[in-house]
Length: 400
Image (tube, rainbow, N blue to C red; front, side, top):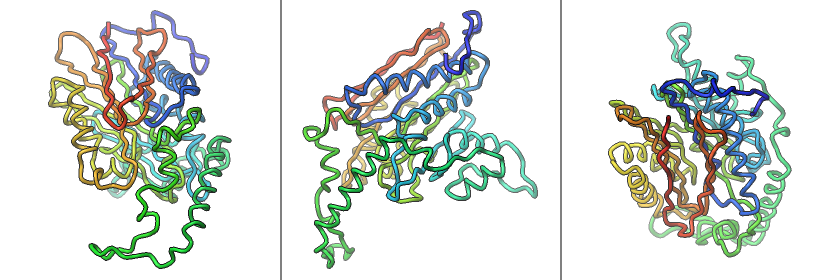
């Protein structure tokens, strides 16, 4: 068990124990060669969360521990090993939300080993009154977030300590490609203007897809041993009392501009929970962040599932209509991708069960879940042979 802690069988659950943890390690392309590593990262996150849940930890504790475990694993795009910005630095986003509606988030933060822990600090401090009736922040970004962390004696690290060898290698490769692209299109100093809008168009915008996009999107040209996982990781947790929390963490898209805020920091876009009349629905999402932001996909997926008796169909409808069917996505020249992991609980039902559902348009999505009565987490690498059509999956998790 992580952290050297052992949980005796008698401690594993109490009567009416709802304890469960669900995690995903991002939607994208997970190579078959690296599949065991991605699934082990999900398993380790479940085990880390379950140590706290079995010992009376809250749902927020479980989410934070799961996200920290994923952030510490260099195979994920979060925390250590994150994609690098255009200038070669690590900037991360993270958020945690409770079923009370409270949340805490940070965006475009550097020098933090575990941005999810800083998001937890922001969340916890929303309950603490400030002098002169000031309102505690629910989201902090950039230098302001760093000042806040120093004020609360939160540990900082050198940015270089967050850069893994593989992340740096990806950055060098992409930088060469971008530099080469710029040299090839140097002659386009006078860019044509759109006759429709009058907006100046760059050479990149005039091409249907850049060479870099084409390499990532065309499966036939992709290195089958190389992962293309550039998205958010997430966790949804239920504690023994049935309280629910969810959270996301991400290093963002590779070669992004400094200061870019992704969906992992945006409540309602990357993470959302709805509670009403004993029914709880929670989601955490991964995908093309700017399109997710325009479509408010996390909150819309929750609403679809909340009002549907068929959770999978509700999720499918949200992916295909609210996201892929939106005008913003259909007219975009960017790669369009989304992955959603969700749970639904009806506390009014006679039987204790959690509906675990997921859907994605990407090639693959890595996930795991664990309850207090399970010895080991159950993992799944969902692979989508119909990309970009929606791939769905899930199960009913029954609690003893």
